Length: 352
Image (cartoon, rainbow, N blue to C red):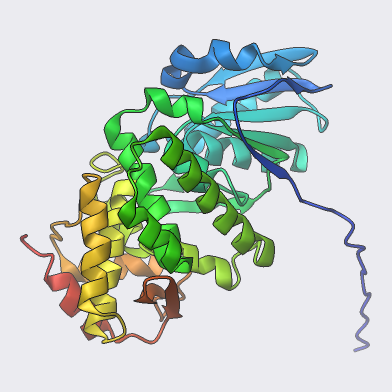
């Protein structure tokens, strides 16, 4: 039988570049319909401040409940239905106004509404300012795990206003610091040393930390937008942390808190393999503890915890990909670590 093929050659003319502005919010002028997606807490604190800076023909507010447990298909459908109600089209714009949950869901809604529209990130938590709002990762959770349904969809712009941090609870602030520390351990030993010597509760200092973190992530994303290599290193702490979040139904820990525990577990694994010194692992742990972040977790069933790794997006059917430090400022990606070694480390967290 004759086989025929047709080549489809597509011109790659789309430029997804965008600016990240770290400053007091200035006027944002849009010539399209706009919907601000937020939650009741952020709306109550800051919506009036944002609305004063938005100039657009029509502005709508879409509110979804606050918290990781609402980062699901029901909330996504609610956002989409309100957009249809207001007759949004491909020229319309969404604005994500909140933390990482709002940013991820809004970006995902933008990526699939009429096959993709623009969205803007205005993050209001430290964690979303230094990490979640940058890089175009969008998605929702399901019962199998975190962010397993989603898409890469870059924002049109990101506006980081440190003013929003003034109303953060201390626990939420600390959760963001975990991601800052993650960035330093992963790529920048001098940044980590600076963090050890600095007080991130100081307003001027935290602005510097935000800028350093954003520049680091922007550099990584520019080289590996779709996470096929280098960008996966930013998941240091997340492989363990996502399992912890799923096991606790996203209610016991904030995302940054789970990542903090995951970083300590990843460091323990690195030390067990003899590729990271115990002294450096202790430095990371002490820095996390300085900001009241949790560094331990009681694993009920080591086998179940290990099996959950296979739902991680970086893993395959037979191999688990771990991001572990060789030293502060450098990590490696390993999918060849024997299950017995990983379980040995996990067993130290049983009945703690």
